[in-house]
Length: 67
Image (cartoon, rainbow, N blue to C red; front, side, top):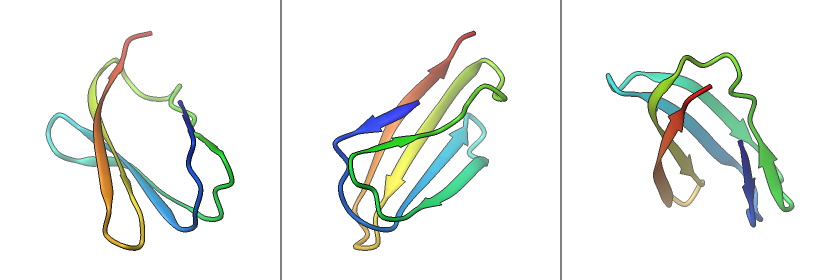
């Protein structure tokens, strides 16, 4: 998964399963344009992906993994 158009510092990315469990949490610093996450180890299913910055702003989107 690749995020484009991100510019800034100190983002946190969380992948959350349908039961509400955080299955991945990664802090990302000094993003200049893109961020790439390796999701090949995840099982097929529905997840949420949440991007948060230090200011408390966040974006949550649906993520479907179907290999």
